Length: 595
Ligand SMILES: Nc1ncnc2c1ncn2[C@@H]1O[C@H](COP(=O)(O)OP(=O)(O)O)[C@@H](O)[C@H]1O
Ligand SMILES: [Mg+2]
Image 1 (tube, rainbow, N blue to C red):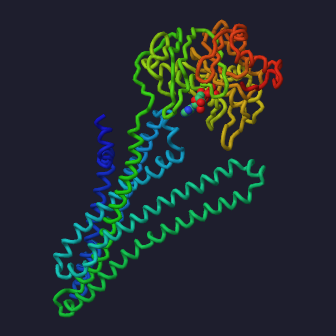
Image 2 (image 1 turned 180 degrees about the vertical axis):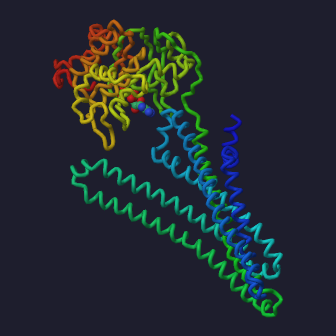
Image 3 (image 1 turned 90 degrees about the vertical axis):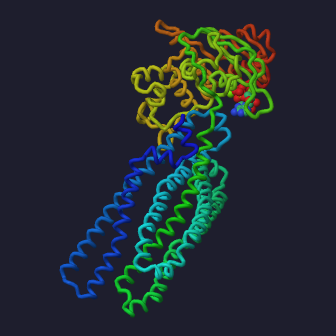
């Protein structure tokens, strides 16, 4: 915990310490590079002075050799600092991305309801990158600037302090000007990124919605719309270039200005032979080298400021507490019963209760149907049970133990839940079924399961069969096929409780009935493990053979009983039964009649 506290308060220090060896070596090489780089002008001065004094060829050769050695070291060490610093800041980015991702997996659905995918992606990509630029190149150039000026300035003052003061007159202003320029660059760059996201989002939507666009003959309009987005992006790029282009001219002008002053103030001294021409050349070289540290300090500070702002946004996410807390420690071994005790539930931020005083009990091995109109609260009930939302305390219990006292892993092992909207991963058919069990499952049992949910034959027809890739650039399945695959994925877990939340809405009613019967048959066979099954469906035919059916309406339980009992007791149920069996006008047989 102490470690993570440190991260939130002092992120730079935290990561530097964590990856100290990369950082340390990087810094050492920066120092060595600068050290040898600063020696070269001194050697140049020596060479020129030796030429003037018509020195021995040998001593000139020694100077040349030293010069060569210095240059070689500079090249070598510069290569190494790039390698080590690169490793350092890329490790930091990788670490941070993983921490963000770990947090995202912890957070509850309520968090994802508050944020768009675009916002989260921007955090993982842009903000992580901006922090990386701060802790890597930002700190690096700042340190580089400081080390280099700390090495150069004393030499310059030592050689000729009067010249130094005059030629460097502009230098102190450079960091401020550069910092201003860079700040503007960042601000505009942010706008450029947003516009880019906007444009690519638009492009994506046009590509995904191409059938709708063509169907409505909207190609021209959409093209115009896209062109407009592309143009605003182009303008944003130009705005960045407008300020970014000032960077090099400012640096070059400072050097040129310093050189002109040098020429002006140093020439008389050289002509009077008070100072050698070699010193003047060395000065010229130092002026050139000093422009970079000043620029680097300005730019480095801005990088770090931007990185801090980005880290703040990342940190807000890292500090986000999951709404559903895994504080329970109890583990359920054998499922016996599940009970709702006057469960009322309101979604965070919602005005009305989605569930009102729901009470009923399910025992092991029972098959329970759940029916009710759209928006009645069926899915909410299931999601509260699976703790995708925070369950009010003491309102739901398993084996008599309050839900919140049971560890989340144990609870979710207990339940195989098939959500209402079938979601498949861009993976093979077999891997989608095997999903939660990784490699323990043989291909044969995957096929067996596919047969149970009546999809085996259809998979065999797909090119690649069980090894066909699904999703983008893969095979696309129909809604009903997707639903059956997600059911197979849940059933193969062999959990004590199976919940199908309207998971068969896109298959025809006969297949739905067959699948439900098959589930019961398999589970009740000699090797059956007697699961408890909760089926949410709007088709009564499917639920007719359930042990009990719960009719839910407007968040409240309307009635509970077997089919025969409900026909007598519940008006809603009776009406629905008549509609679906075609006895009432407007009925469509046993098919898709909404309540
Ligand atoms: N994530 C949510 N946030 C806020 N309200 C929700 C959310 N999901 C569903 N609701 C509301 O809760 C009520 C019950 O919805 P739901 O359980 O999905 O109904 P059903 O599954 O019976 O069709 C509806 O009024 C719906 O608008
Ligand atoms: Mg629902």
